[in-house]
Amino acid sequence: MTAVVAAMTMVGLTAGVGASAAASPADIVPPSQDPFYAVPSNVADYQPGAVIRSRQITPKWALGELPAVQAWQVAYRTNDGEDAPTATVATVLIPDKPWTGPGTRPLMSYQSAEDSVGIDCAPSYSWRNGIFAGLGEPLADPFAVAPALLAGWGVVVPDYEGPKGMFGVGRMAGHGVLDGIRAALNFAPDGLDRNTKVAAFGYSGGGLATGWAAELQGSYAPELNYVGTAGGGTPAKLLDVVKWLTGPGRYAAGLAAGGMIGIMKQYPHLQKFLNDKGREFYKRYENACAPQLVAELPFRDINQYTNSPDLFAEPEVVAAAERQSMGSQAPKAPVANYHGMLDEVVPFPQNKQAVEEWCSRGASVDVTWVPLAEHVLGVAPWYLAGYAFLNDRFAGKPAVNDCGTVTSS
Image (cartoon, rainbow, N blue to C red; front, side):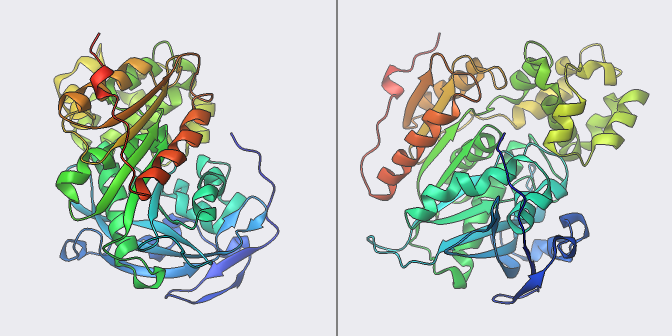
C-alpha cells in the first residue's frame, strides 16, 4: 500500500542499551532466529509490562535511517488472549529535541496493521531492517508516526500479536499494547515516567489492537495516565468480519484465513474442525505475512477447509469469537472512532454495533462515520482528525461525546 525505496545501509545491533554497530541487512536476522525475541522460561515471574531485555537500534524508513530520533527495542512480559503469561517486543522512539510542552513528554502507542500470523512479520523487524524486512504493512509505520515525532511526542510500536502471531485475538492485542506502554514507561533511558500522558492510535488491523487497548485499559492497566484513543476501520466483531470476508468481501478472504489461524493458535482445540485439506492449509500458512495471505488466498471459502457444514455456527467457534470481540465494557478514556460506511474489507455495521454498546455502557465516543468512504479512503479522515484528537487530549481539552446522538437501528 505504500511506495518504498530500497535502503542503502542497515544497522546491526548488539545486546544492551546504548550499544550499536554497523551491519549489513544479512546480519539482521528475522525474529524467528533472534534470541532477543525468546520468551524466558520464567516469564511468569515478571510483572506485566516489565522489561526483560533491551537494545538500542538505529530505526529505518524507506529512504534509509530515520533522522533525529533515538530508538530502542524492549522485550517485555505480557499476557495472551486468555491471560497466560508470555513476552513480546516493542520499538520505542524518542525525538532528539527536548520536550518544551507542559509536564513530561507524552507517549503515543501506534498499532501497525500487521494482519499476519508469523513472528517474522512483526513491526519491530521492519524498524530495524527497513525494506529488507519485506513489503508488509509495517513498512509504512515511519510515515504514520512522523507527525507524532515532529510534535515531540514519544512513540511506542508494540508487536501486539505476540510471539505466535495471534492475528485476530483481540485480548492478546490489547494486553500487548497496554503492556508495551508500561514497558516504555518502565524503561529509564527513554526519559518517560508514570506521570506521562499516553494515548493509542491505529487503523484497520491496528484499529483492532487500539480498540481493545481502549476497552481493557480501565480494568487491566488502570494506573496509566491514559487520556484517549483514536481508532479507525476497526474490526470490532470478529465473527461478523470473518463472515463478511468469506462472503461479500471475499477478494480479501486471505485476511479471514489469517484470523482463523490466529484464533486456532489461541484455542488449539478448534483445530479439530479442520479436514485433511484444512490441516495442510494450516501448516502451509501458520507463519504467513499479510501480503502472502492476501495474494494467495483471494475468494476462498473457509468452510472448504473444515469438516463442519458451517464453521461459523459451531458453538465452540462462536464462543471463542465472542470472547475476542469488543463491546463488553466501556473504554474509560475518550475514544475517536472513524469508519467508512462503504468499507468493503471491515464492514461498517459491526463497528456501529460496537460503538453503540460502548455508548450504552457510558463511554465517551467522538464518532465520524464517512458516508462515501471505503477502507482505503477511510484512512484520510482518521489520520488527520485522529492526530488532532490526540493533540487535544494531551493538551487537556474536553472531548466531544457523540453518544447522545448514536442510536441503535
